Length: 151
Image 1 (tube, helix red, strand yellow):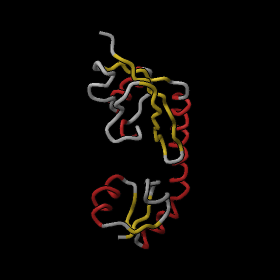
Image 2 (tube, helix red, strand yellow; image 1 turned 60 degrees about the vertical axis):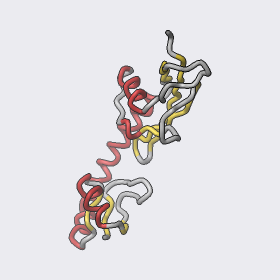
Image 3 (cartoon, helix red, strand yellow; image 1 turned 180 degrees about the horizontal axis):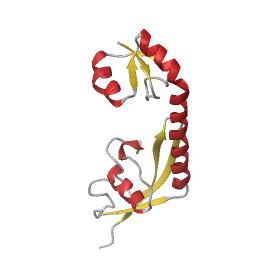
Image 4 (spheres, one colour; image 1 turned 90 degrees about the vertical axis):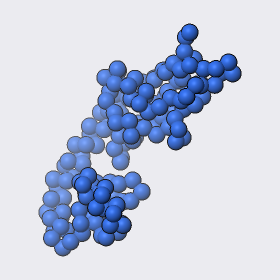
């Protein structure tokens, strides 16, 4: 199925591109989310007609993401976790814990935007760099320091 992307989609394409995807991916994810529209002749004409509005909306989202990135600059996240005798964590630091810490600082971020670099969170003590994808063109990095919990 051919679709026109209404926004940048990671590992698929940029806004305005016509790409071929499996029908289920388009029908169940891209179309309901508003990230794409079916590539019919009428939709192509509509997209070209609306391009300025779409570009302006994209620009506003990018500017908002830049503001959040500026707020994140210099923020150090410190999370205390229980550790065993050999300095190993019980469990791991999750995206929800980092987002909760940032919300206490007044910064709201969707936890799905955080990338620890590993699929199961942070499992060791020390400093770790976490990438936050705020916008397809804007990323921020936050240093997460994991310390032993005081008993």
